[in-house]
Image (cartoon, rainbow, N blue to C red; front, side, top):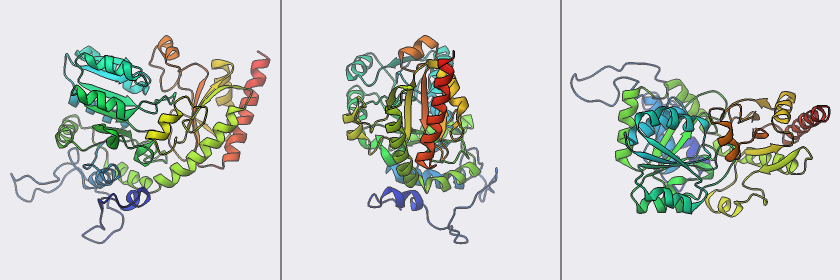
Length: 393
């Protein structure tokens, strides 16, 4: 199945695959093997060694390609394996990467601590400001890396406008679309050259696997990624590919319900006395609401909240949760709550974090599939405990 005439619910379940031709199994088999027999010695064949290619991994890649209406995806052992393989495939010493200023801490760390010592310059730019992007691209650049919505502030970047600016100067564009997936945002249709995912998050959705993927319509880019993945050994494992295929089947249903829950949580927090500000792209108060309506189908299942009382309030609230889980992850069916300044973005210097809006009082809530009223009640009691501790401090 490759036709875009099918909607995402159908493509997530049936896309790219037929029943197993050997036995008719509805689920693709797990080819848990390192080695494949060479039928004709010296002649190329599709599968020889699972560090290079594997049929179960290929099944997931085919389905992700159908979702993005592109070539089969290239999958990796983690989201960071996808990021690092992509950047190593695209840049060399002397090159410059233009990157969103608010970006996952691991991406920031890889550019600053791995690529820059190798002679690759990273320039972090407020990509919500098109003039700033245009100015950054006036000097020779090898790649424009966007993250939208940004982790964790949910700041948006206009993908179509930035892609047009980059195309005018011959710079490829990659969008980290982990937060929304192709169900809610489709970067390739907006002009990007590739979209990048931590499949660990919503695509798997069950806290069961670690993985990453890159989707592109450019056969040369895909070939470079596959070759470098072979050299680095960053391929996804067959078992994790199989589990991710199962999670993918319910992705549209999960995102719909989790986004509904997130909006209820955001509306509750917007009126809470312990809260300074609430951010969600579907809120009418969201400063980039018009852009969110234009390039996203919905705002997604993440809510970012600024707590009164800063670090002490955040620590107290997370420690008081009973239903929500304090954790350094997102996108699962369970509600996960993250203090980004001490978890995902701890590698960014404190002054830089604060300048980017990643304050000590900022908390990211990955809203799950639990009953929305019970999620809200849990947050309410946790905020009440934080307030009492702040009053007695």
